Image (cartoon, rainbow, N blue to C red; front, side, top):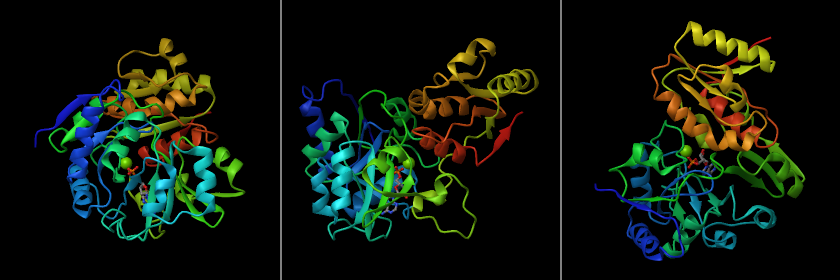
Length: 345
Ligand code: AMP
Ligand code: MG
């Protein structure tokens, strides 16, 4: 199919373009749109055949459920059964990068939820996403707009790379602000389980809910016979073609190790801005200042795509901290690295 590509710089002034994208979705087609987390591959969440098209376009296993996107937090009620805790979370964090798993209503087909009787609901804050959902008049089912197995797209160029010719329209809204997928939580009354860390941090959730448990799969590799709480966790999300090794240890020792490696092997490095001047430029990708986890999160997926496009035999990066937004970064990187960490002392 021919993919139409439209740049959206002013959602208010470009209502007509957004209305056309909404029309595509209402008619069962696929439109890619920007959100504050990553780009989403959108289709009508009430239409089983649109869900099938989404899985086909991504090459994604159809038991890995989709998140449905609503224009307003209270719209969740039309498609799911929210409780008080949902509304407390909504008040604190929506619109924003939080997805809540709720019991689903019958108007959301099981094709969307991977056969589950729960549905993941999110209300994004990006103005293009919000306008598109409102104009479509239906909830939009949208996984990240990458081919399955590639890093999530944080700019329209990543989407074009992966999905050109596989979707009806791509709306380019520039670079995504957060750069990592949404935080996902499951509710059990007022108890909350963090299934996937993201822009809404563990500490922020604890301010709203007394009991927050972090699912094992967030930080640890599950054994072959362990069943994850979220189907997506069993998939090795993204693996670069060269092995990714995460480095931990004192800053000067890690830098010295990287300098040695640049002499010894054909490696790509995701480094801190401060290290750039001390390393050779070839296959070097700066991800932000050492203490600036927000910028590192925003740049991670683009940097991984770039490193993957080199002929490097091995990719090195720093092991992130696990506090604050660091936990989300840690979770994505540790999975991309298949839990390979090298400690240097
Ligand atoms: P993505 O669409 O790529 O952001 O991935 C969506 C993630 O949400 C996947 O990892 C799913 O496993 C998770 N998810 C979606 N719906 C549910 C649900 N009903 N129960 C548990 N996890 C879900
Ligand atoms: Mg994804």
